[in-house]
Figure 1 (cartoon, rainbow, N blue to C red):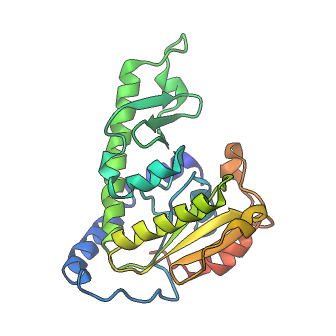
Figure 2 (cartoon, rainbow, N blue to C red; figure 1 turned 90 degrees about the vertical axis):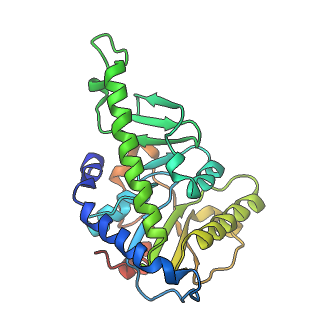
Length: 259
């Protein structure tokens, strides 16, 4: 499934999004005082949290479909700002932006994350190669509308009773303690936002860095490794047979029963 095919699924997902919103509304009154339940054997949803869209392409490759959420197709340039945005999703793309024509993306400066746009580069530029103001404005309006829809949809998921597998690719830095602390803070934030508590955060690491991860696994936190993350230029072409993702499919994707 190509990127544009995935982006164009928004209309097909409207019914699912409305059902999700209704589910969130019906459960909101009881969820605050309810005891958070154990993680079930199966998940109703699988959601990519970043740092880029490789996980979404892996999901598409396995399930032949994907329910897009706020972070499904982003590239996060700053993981701290990504985490900060979890409870500020409607602020994403609300301020200054930067067009990145070489990658056909728009970068939200406030949260330093980039989003794919539907317009092609040749549709944004004039005959001299300069960006056209009218085309850029139209592309930004479309993206902001899409982002607002995805923010609503993600918040509805957070408030729903559905069980969800969240996946985040962690790039290790030279500060292992900070890397582990970041995952703990992501887990804590998800725990505070996901009302039913019925979720698991799967952290995907490159195998060479696995020994640096010191947090204990639990019903809410799981770890998986791949030999290497796919090169950024090839995330659409990732082979899931021999690169470590096959093990992730067998252990985790098989537990996801997408609607």
